[in-house]
Length: 302
Ligand code: NAD
Image (cartoon, rainbow, N blue to C red):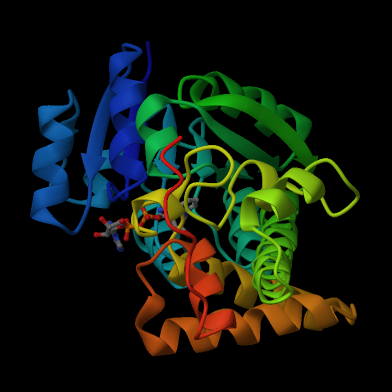
């Protein structure tokens, strides 16, 4: 088993580091938060005094940080030149494509193999080891990262060269934001036109309006499988994180001159929802803003 440095032990990284330790790896963990470090210790990781100390002698370095600026800072100040060049560097954070590519290039110039490996799946999937990883980097980098990612996920997909993992992640989430907003809008209109939400679900989930947002993550309580809508929109995928991903997608679209009108509309809607206090609610709660007069149906009891 290998010596793995894990930096960033928050909501996602905490569970991921625990799964690497459970698989028998020697996990040296670092986070700026004392609470996060204590939780990681409880789950079988050992504590490092700094990121630089964590990566010393590591065979793999995994990072799960909030955004591009944290990733740039950590790799430049504590990983490059501190970790052995034989270590595989794996950044699992969701960040902008440009930073992923530039940090990947600096890694290569410093003699390291590095992959961007953002995830799909939330905190529950991080804890359960059932994340999906989208990986950008060389074939060699991908093959070296895979055994570690396998211990934290159920699917590991090679998306292409450096930055391609981030591209796959944010384009997928742009589509998710668009389909969720559209699904919410459709339920509101259906109800105003006199259709029962369950009846509209029965129709649309088997017709051409079907999507994952409809059938697996229905925004209406009591309709479809159990979702955050059934728990007052608590837990799940926070609207603030959806907004973050939509902003990254719009930034990326602008950088390559892609026309993304629906993604732009979804970004505007989620921006308004977050500024009205919806940041920590599940992203499907936007149904409540799409029509302020929206009243969820009473539970049917089945
Ligand atoms: P989080 O804020 O809970 O965790 C981030 C951790 O990084 C914190 O514990 C923080 O103290 C630590 N950190 C920040 N700067 C640091 C530094 N310089 N050195 C060491 N530690 C540092 O965030 P999260 O929810 O775990 O998300 C992490 C990443 O995963 C984000 O990029 C997010 O977009 C992505 N993501 C999150 C989810 C989700 O459902 N939470 C799902 C998919 C992807």
